[in-house]
Structures are given as structure tokens and as C-alpha cells.
Image (cartoon, rainbow, N blue to C red; front, side):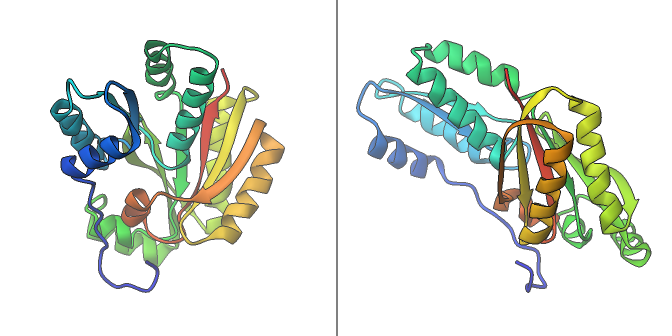
Length: 230
């Protein structure tokens, strides 16, 4: 992604692909909890809903819009699995996910606005000014919507601001702490080490940013995922 000069576009799976996948992994009559990236950034959830409708009577498919992406979805899936193994009902699991998703925060800093410009998320003039002034934007994914929240001078300051914004939101509350990055493992590891010192993290992890988000924000994007422990 770093070497291309054109904007990369992603494409969600088709309803037919979901139908084939569900039939491959499940047996007739099974309930399938299908958790997906925010519907406001991808059509994946919509495809899953269409597939669920087609499979009525064969499977009980329950598509869920996670309102997040990347590690956030992974943590939801893990917690859902824990609940299932503990004997919780499907309704209990769905209720938990619907309740937790508005509390998960994804705070990112971009290395450049060029990819956001090509995706239509910022205007060309804003991107040009940010480049000239060495401004590093901060984006927040909250309730499924990715918004440009602030602009900070220098990379160092932007990483510090990401931590500060997370701290303002969660304070000393226990969280699962994740760091995501788009082709910048070094910055991601540095952010994770700093975050460990500031948050009441019950568990930490690092991963590459989901391509559907990274394609809109560009290489060099680094950020935090804060998932409350309940």
C-alpha cells in the first residue's frame, strides 16, 4: 500500500459468498452469530443480512454490526465465545455485544491526509495544508463513524495526544488495550509500551489495522483500541 500512487478500494463479500460460507461451517438448524465491521465503513454487514434472509429456515443467522473494526471485532468475538462456553444464551450474548459496542473506542493518528483526501474524507486543500505544516490528524472511530477529531503538530505530539484522549475517556477503568498500525510496527510497539504505563490494562495486544480502514487512512496510521472489561 505504501508504494502505490492511486487510491486503493476494498470490496465486501457478496451475499452469495456468505451463503456458501455459512453452509460450509454449519449444519442445518444451527445458530450463527456473525459479527462484522461497522456498516458505515463497509457493506459487509449488509451482505450478511441479505444472506441471513436467504437462509431462513435453514440456519438462524444473526448478523451484528460491531460499530468498530480490527481488534475491536476480535475482542467481541472472543468475549462472545467465552459467554457461549459458560452456558449463556444467544440472546444474552447479543445483548452484551449490543451494549458494549458503543463503549469501545478506536483513536488513530494519521501520518498523512493524502489517503483520506482520496477517499473523500477530507478536502484537497486541508490535505495540502496539513502536508505543508507537518500536521498529523487524529481520527476517532466511535459508534461506527470515523471522524477527523483534531490536528496536532508533529508525529510525537500526535501519539501523545492519542494516549491523552484515551486516558480522558477511560481514566483508571480496567480495559483490554490494543494497538493497531498500518505498515508501521515500530511506532505501534512504541505506542503500546507507553500505553501500558498509563492504562489499567488487563491484557494488551498489537495488530495490523484492518485493510478496510487502513485503505482510507493510509500507511503510517497508528492508534489505540480501548475495550472495557465488564
